[in-house]
Amino acid sequence: MATMDELKKAAGVRAADMIKDGMTVGLGTGSTAAHMVNRLAERIKTEGLSVTGVSTSWSTTLQCRSLGIPLKEMGEVSHLDMVIDGADEIDDNKNLIKGRGAAHLLEKIVASMTDNYVIIADSGKKVNKLGEKFAVPLEIIPGAIAIVTERVKKLGGDLKVRMGAPGKDGPVISDSGNLIADAKFGIIEDPDKLARDLEHIVGIVGHGLFVGLVTKVILADAEKGLVEF
Image 1 (cartoon, rainbow, N blue to C red):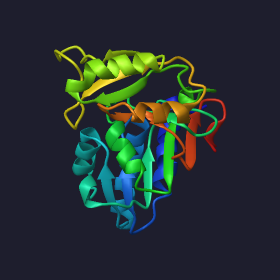
Image 2: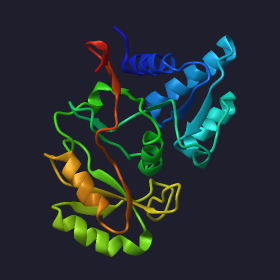
Image 3: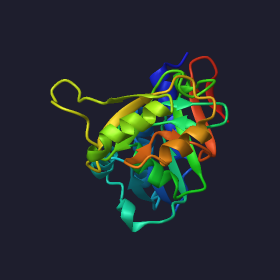
């Protein structure tokens, strides 16, 4: 029986093999997405595939540079042929929570550029309803933290600024220079409504609810192998 890491690699390979010659592709962040990027680099080298990537984070940018994958800056493009990324939670309707890696704002900008948004993840990310395991990540203008905390509380959420890992003092700062916080709402019965409510709070520049964006999910499942829906 394949290990979970082998299945995650297989999911990454499956997604990378969907990329066609001449495409401009958004490249996501995370352990499963890293397998996809490795496979894409292999195809470029062995098949002569002509592909341009748009990265969603510094970690993916550095990986692409080390592998020789051509990149364009996010601000240079307005349309992508495909975007492949990971997720932290996925429900039955292909709605997501993203942002444990603090890149959800850039990831959502990239996701909005395509009609072909593919998510690759392990089966542990699948939930019946969003909010079962994780809070909703928020990216917040530093000067708005007090008012955002109060407004999120009125929506029933408990907001905490995310602090850096051991070895880094202070809060987590996004690639765009904003604070990252996590708002715990519990089970989210209506992700679309909560997403809209959060978007109306001045000071929040991005939230980790991805609603109605995903076209395909490829799950690595220890019992079933690769599951697509």
